[in-house]
Length: 317
Image (cartoon, rainbow, N blue to C red):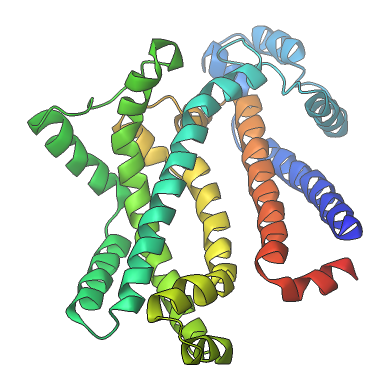
């Protein structure tokens, strides 16, 4: 297991290095000059040249790349062109909104999906399964931004149970902060729960047909006991795969939902940085998201080994 973990960590580091080079190169070839954008299209050429020198944009590609790379290793992502503050501080500030939102949406979607999948398999062939599958299909086909607008109109404007948008900050207290994140969490969790419900149901149905489940039933286990004690643990592999993909999406792909609720998250930060040609911020945020995706993949790999004992000899080899 130690060799397995070290191998995964080495793969993580190499993937991050490759991703950093690709990200830096792609952003470098994007059209437009940040210095000219900051000073205006009609700015004096000498003023633009001076600003480029001040920002370090006149340095060769490799010099700027390695300065950025070694700076990230120290926790220094550079300074924002627009905000004139360290990029690391901007990312941490926005992560304090995006990370709790993604985690809450993932926990809610997982709870709803596992419960719905268990219910669908328990009542397979009955009207309850048809109702659950219809709801899951509707959830897959419904965009989360439409749900966000619907929730705002119903629960905020009509009923007044939750705020319609904005985020008061964690300094205002846990209650107001979670109240501001409640509707975005629901809007993000519902479509993800629909996808996970279909995957979990298929995995449970396949597992229920295995010999060990039949043996457990023959020994006197009820259908519910066989489903929860034997089928569910052995159906975790595809479920964990989807969960890993969903967390990365929820962290990075909630741009429209954040815009609907005026949440100061990573998604809105990236959009603003792109519009303002603040490439340092774009690079920093993308690298954080790449690291999150790779780290979640590592956690999922470890959970594979935990969930399926058959993978442990292979991991130890």
